[in-house]
Image (cartoon, rainbow, N blue to C red; front, top):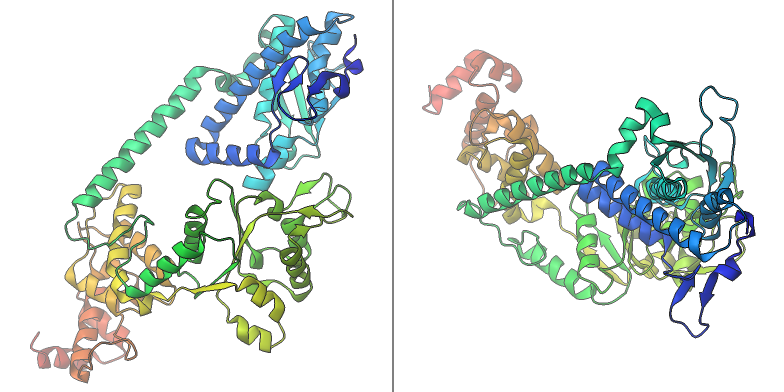
Length: 540
């Protein structure tokens, strides 16, 4: 038998009623490519690139070695060379990659490679691009490991393959070159570590160290007696009645598959609420996929959401799964839904109504089962009146609406959130900062936080980095926060103008380190006037 004689219909055995699948006599499984892509993302997010690459490369190597042994004994080969080439043919039949054998290095100086091939439609490159975006280095780690394991068994010596081109990093196709260990020289050194257990042991040791550090930080946070956080199992800080109501409704609607519209100003935590809904739902085992509709150009949005087929437009060199399909059995967050242009709104409405999509350039429809959560900081009712947003799409998305209040309307949450952010930032940066001075805490409460929770988190991280003390003071806060005056709309008491003026002058002096000349310039008054007012307040 020759490698090209391998036939999928003959190799694959299955019972039409269901049950075990066998390929070349060995049990196999049907796995969804997107699920493998999500596993890759989880490995990278948990272990880092080096750890994920080590696991997937070692898995591929073991798989390749086993397949080579199975094929050697299961089929009658015309020659050993046909058996050695069968690995690439097998990958093509299994749909992992389309292999085109090459001899580009045949006339190059030095020994001819044992194996050389172009890879088309690599599922690994496709999934890496889908879930993680373009990479700086080749990403077909499992496939490369498989080829190395297969050839090592077939040639009964250490053979290693290097992917020097990859679709995952922007090349037209992937290319693989395989040589015996002795012929690689120094070129193999950066790749060889991923086949060795020491690489994985090092990564796992680092993960263990990181987990221990996180555990210490959590213990330290629990010891902070000054923190008045009220957290439930959701992980949210729920001091304010407004946020308690939001989380209560979110927890209840998570149990059904109705579409949800999250509204609120930028930075209030809409994506955080969407993730909570996903994690509290029956779809928690599925993927959570998010897209910022306002960040994708109009001509690419349809392809991002629905996918496309090869050749459907310039640059579409392979089929691509859209985010609706990627989120199957999970949750799809359509963030900034108010930014979607009207022509795309029509297609989006049809997808939501019919629960099926059609890839760009394709004639057939594909069913989808993603739960839809939309989010916006726009007033969609006003957008409908201005004919910029479809009313029927609005009601399709707004089965349940959750309005997340801005931070200025839930001031009970400001200090608990700020203290939590101090603990997080101090842990990340290694700074020993444990809270706020009374003056700094007062200023945090006086400021209106137009950027909401996101602005608060950034302000606290800046303060943790800049402070020279164990507690954050007003001069460590951003100027607009450190000089904040109470807003008449949100103030709880009516204060005299003299009190407001005194407090503002104090804040200005703290912001410039007590330099009265500089404070007078910032306040826009003469230095003599400042001295007179300080004396008037009894602080001269």
